Each structure stands twice: as structure tokens, then as C-alpha cells.
Length: 413
Image (cartoon, rainbow, N blue to C red; front, side, top):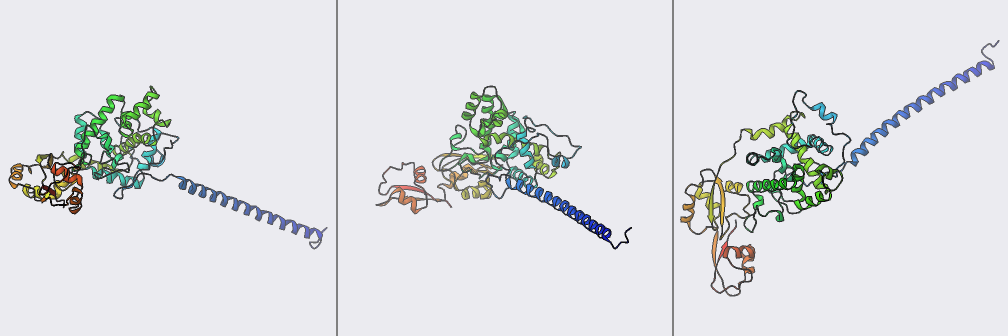
């Protein structure tokens, strides 16, 4: 029998000490294992966030754009849980006139649109559209075209009248110079692409022509982006295939593949803003519901009249003339040609006669050619282009000036 002071007692104490150390070691292993898993999960999340492609669309007026990176098709076409959680369950979701809002390519952009940053961006674009969207809606109804086309200028230009892309596409509908004919005109005095009303008519005519050619709205809309020639080649090489097949299989260029999904995503978010829990977007979209299409007067000028002169004779602000005629590149109507000027309703009454009686435009001088003068030298002196002088005076750049020849020098203030 052991009295507690012998070898057996020592062995038992050593055993207990070893067991306690094992437990402490096990707890340490479990603690560090848990910590490692947590750190790994956090690192993975940060890595995924860093790997997200950055937006490529150039911003204008500090608007936040929808991402324009390469498409990565989500695994599901259903709205994400976060979106569903924010949606108002008692609101019925409206179906769009053109199918594809729930296609995976569209869902990607829809979810981007519903971030807080991009909701603000959409609201800004809708606020910009207020002066023009009533007219666009009216024309869409008259031509029996899908109403969601009113949101295409959001994809194109953020509804910025002065938008000019890096490739030179201009206006809210982003017409290139080579795509203007036969709808729009451009010269040194004016650029119809910058006129929201004229360019709307041109864009809807082009879209209608595309529909007649391709018999399918997604193809017609994508062709507005890539050109009917490029779309014709893609369709010819893939007979019987629709837009979604061409987009999914990278047959179209990336920008054109994203074009239709972006439109459908933005249209879905705006038309179903309440459903997606974004009443602020619905409020911005509905501002124009009580706004009738503005009515205007039109007057045809024949020659160069400054905006200041027209405003004084019409009894309106000069800024109003500029706002209603953004296509005019100068502060005057084109010289030596007719131009139809848009004015507020009632402002054109008696104006034609007043302009006729006013005589020569105030913002111009008559210059007498002296020895040594050249068109280039005169243009530099008055900060004009040689083209300006030639158009105003109906002469050619190669013409030789004569002594005492009279030239009209437009003064642009």
C-alpha cells in the first residue's frame, strides 16, 4: 500500500501534469485553427473584391456610370437575395415589351444598377431627361415603337446634350458623323446631332429601319450600336440565331453584346422601381407624368442674326434661344443660308418682320480688303476660321482677294 509519498504518487502527479498540458495544447490548436479559417475567409473576400473589374465608361458631370467591364454570365437568372429582400412583395412586377430582362446578361447589369451608387446615377440621368422625354414618349407612341426605347439615351449619353464620345459620337443619341445621313446635317454653323428633338426623330427612324431589316428588336437595337452592316454579317454567318446566341458566344463585339442587356436592365429597374424597393427612382421617372409636351414656335431665318439681337426683338432671354437650339455652334444663325429656329410658343409672332426691318446683323462688320490681305490673315485677326469667312461671303479658300473687296466679318461673342 502507498502512503502518498512514494513513487506511485509521483507518477500520478506526472500523469496529471501531462494530461493538463495535452488539453492546453489541444485548446491552442483549436483556437489557432479557428483563427486561421477566419483570416482565410476574410482574405478570400478581400481578394474577390479586388478582382472585380473597374468601370470603363467615361463619366460626365460627375455622374457615376454603370460598370462596362467584360461580361461574366451569372450562374442564375434570378434576382439576388439582397434584391429580393429589398423588393416590395405586394407590388406586381411589370413585364417589359422586349423579352430579355431576366436573361443572365441583363441580370448582371440589373444588380449593378440597384447598388446605392448607381441608383443615384440613374436618378441624375432621369432628371436630365425631363425636357426631352415627353417628346420622345410622344414620338414612340405615334410610331408604335416600344416605350422602353426612351431609356436608350441613358445607355448612350446619360441624357447629356453636350456628350461627345472619344470616337466623336455626339448628342443624347450619340450619332457618329458617318451615320447622320440622311437624317441629320452638320456644317461649320450647326450640328443637328446636338439637337435632342431632331436627333430623336433620326434615332427612331434608324431603329425602325433596323427592325424592318432584322425582324427582331434585340437585333435591331444592337445594330444601332454596332451598325447594320456589322449585324448583317453576324446574322448571315449564324443563320437562325438570335441576339442572345450572338452575345453569349462572343460573335458580337463586347460593347454590342452588353448594349441590349444594359437597356433592358435599366428599363426594368426604372419601370419596376417600386418592386425592387427603389421608390426614389420611381419618383424621378414620374416627374414628367404631369408635364405635357412643350409647344414651340418656329421661324426661318435667312442670314446671320445674333442671338442677342433675336432675343431683344422677340422679348425673351438669350439663354432661352441657346437652350432650345443647342445644335447651333455659334451665337448667331447661319450666314447665307436658311435656318429654322425653335422659339418658345408665342415668341415668333411678328419677329420675321422685325428682323427684316432691323437690317444687317449687329454682330458683324464689313471689312474692306487692303494690299497684302489673305483669308488666313483676316481670319487670324478676327479669331475666325478661313471656312467661316468663306461660308459667310460665299467664296472659296483658293479665291484671290481683290483690293477694296468687301467682306462680311461675323463677330462671335
